[in-house]
Length: 86
Image (tube, rainbow, N blue to C red):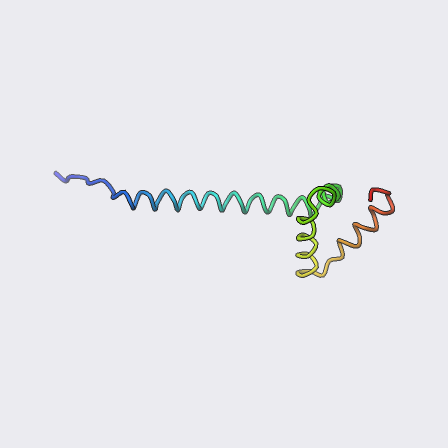
């Protein structure tokens, strides 16, 4: 009869660590995509971010200008000014 030996402790540690890192990365990517999707589709959410977390909105605008040449920043400023929100 074959005797089953347990895995060494360092192999279990590496396995659990890699699994934890994978789950954390997956959650981080999902949250980042959700935030980008919300910023990309909801002008009121962009206004909230402008008032409370301006550095996040600046990163969103910079990414859009760098990748696609979008003028979202100017359009948002024009709409918010005409509505009297800023």
